Image 1 (cartoon, one colour):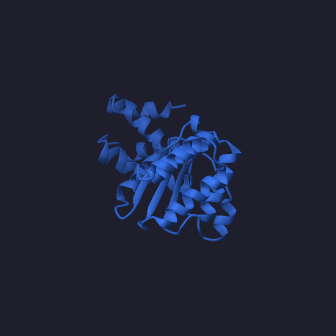
Image 2 (tube, one colour):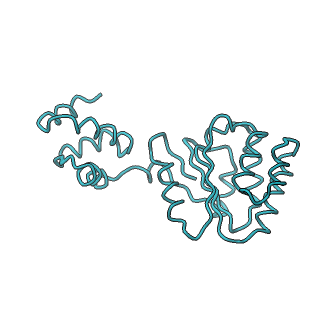
Image 3 (cartoon, rainbow, N blue to C red):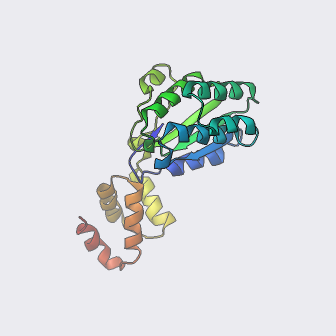
Length: 209
């Protein structure tokens, strides 16, 4: 579970995980408000997990005539019988799924997934899933804002080494304190500072709201 506010780098982190998961198959599901309906979500997740290998099963999901638990059991059985190459399902922007029926479906699915299947969810706030139960079983890894924030050294590397702003330590420290290591804030301020004369940057930072 990657849970942090907007602009914290959640999707970037998940994409980096997908890029480096060379020994696993990765299914990426970019969610939007239109997916927050169980009958819409079921065929969406079926297509993500089954790809083109099971057109008959996907057709069953697309009809909308299948119950949630039956759908979950079909997916679980298929995943259990398929090749046991590690599989990672990434649910990006899970906070957009507000339908309680979807959360109940995901709880049931997660509870019974084969060991080679893993779910990575990015969200702006915790979903109403059985997270406490997963924590108690040591089956949940969590990354939150405290882990997503840049350290002061990371901020300095980003601003000076990567973006080439050549800011003195005092200004880097001011920017870091103003943004609290929030990468989107650092990025937006860096874009502004790139167009400001070096002699005026300290005044600009002092006058920030």
